[in-house]
Image (cartoon, rainbow, N blue to C red; front, side, top):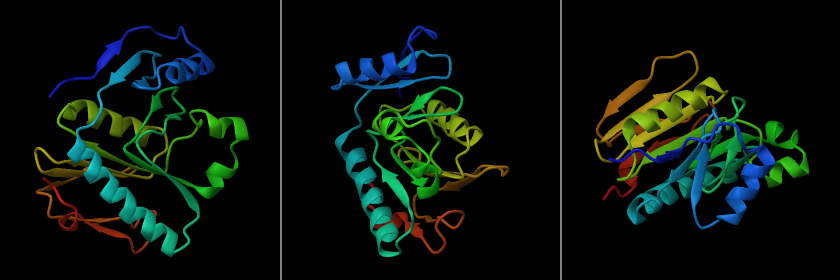
Length: 194
């Protein structure tokens, strides 16, 4: 697996300049770390994108059927975390209360909030340590529940504040959204894995 390419630029771009840079290069995917360095992200493989979409659709249908107040986002969405990093989780969700506090302009850029729920799915080009570091960063910035699904080593990592990381071997696991979504269970056996 490869580490993403990082261009060490430091804090030479403001939030607005980084947003414009991303818009001018909209065929590429970028993140920015808390030091202002730009990270070039490779596109995900087709199967990983399908796996991601299956989970997004299942969660979205469940949230819609129960009228859970919040906003669900796909992998093309960037968020400016409290530490200044701009990250794009594969799947993310923000409570309606947090979303409604943002200005219209903030909603049109990389919203300055940390999602309450995130999912990262390891694709063939992803380095596991890099993804684990991102998960730690999300939790340190206010995320309440995170799932890291490693299709290649067949492991699942569950992150919650003030708890040890829960690790499951194999992808035959049922993931509970209980911390945020009482009653929601994602059975990974129902998601095609290869």
